[in-house]
Image 1 (cartoon, helix red, strand yellow):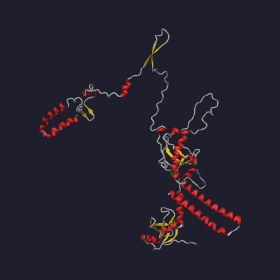
Image 2 (image 1 turned 45 degrees about the horizontal axis):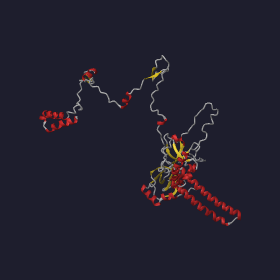
Image 3 (image 1 turned 180 degrees about the vertical axis):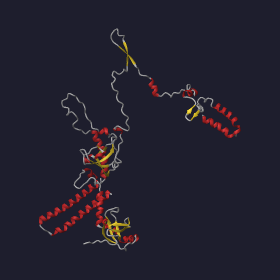
Image 4 (image 1 turned 120 degrees about the vertical axis):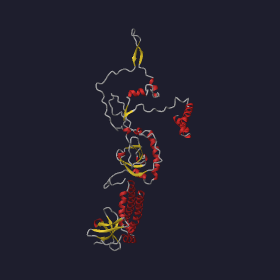
Length: 169
Length: 293
């Protein structure tokens, strides 16, 4: 039922408070509600932090309890947590949310145009398939085409969205 | 001249030791006197010490009138040189005129005053206005412009017949209104004035630094014209007023001149033309306070 546990070395994401959005490693447990926490590579000083504001990630580091910051840092860098974190879907969703909030009016227009174009392409392919299906009844050819149609559409849309985001920056 | 004299005095004083000072001074003074014989009149006299001995601080021995006599101010009356205005003013305008009068036995002419006394004095004086401070007429007000609005910014108009349209800002006019253009070819907004308060400034900017805006585009150019010739006996007062607004040729030429330059810049940015063609609107889930413009 539970897959992520509070343990020494568990990397946690701070959801609210002064250090919101940063990653920390649990160094020791103080009592039922607090842990000694340290984030040498994410700019969080060694301090007590309530569990409530922490959200556990999938990463665990290897160091003994109450290890000093230097050890935590070594373990962190050895595991390359920062890069691994940036590659997770969780981090990507956060980044996408931030970008969306920062969109200017012009960016919103560009995204709207990109979405429209993408949907047109998809619709076009769907209509084609539907036409074929209605003409010739069920055929095995159906299974191949949707995948091909999705790919160029998705590629175009992601390109446009990336363009928009880049332009905005 | 006094400086010259002092220098003349100093030189012999420096050269000769203290003993010879008095003897040296005389010839030096004589020399100086001979040199500046012609210029004695112009030479500034050394100022006399105060002729009013002090009794206590702030109190002198002699009164004002005594000092007047002691300083011989009756001899020293100076006037400022006459200015050109005063010279002109001396030519007094004619106060009276002699006019011919008809009829015999009337003595041919009368002497008539040109500026006559007023024939009516109001019973109450016009009350003097209380002194006010810093109340300026509109023409002297300070015009402000939001920092987010710079030449070339894309603005969203919020009021007027062009509400929701995205428009390029050109410059601020003297009354503080913003001069704005569609451009006309893109969204049918001509060269027009917009009010700063009823406009959202986006962060999108067009590079307008090279665009020259004609100087005759001022507030007077854009002001609404109203014909007023009320002939009181005309039955239909409402029809004769300017109903239909006609676009003058000058407006068209000005529009073309400005727009051609602006359009050239707009075409350089991809998708900007389509952006200006679109209108701004809110829909479900879109909250203006959360939008970044």
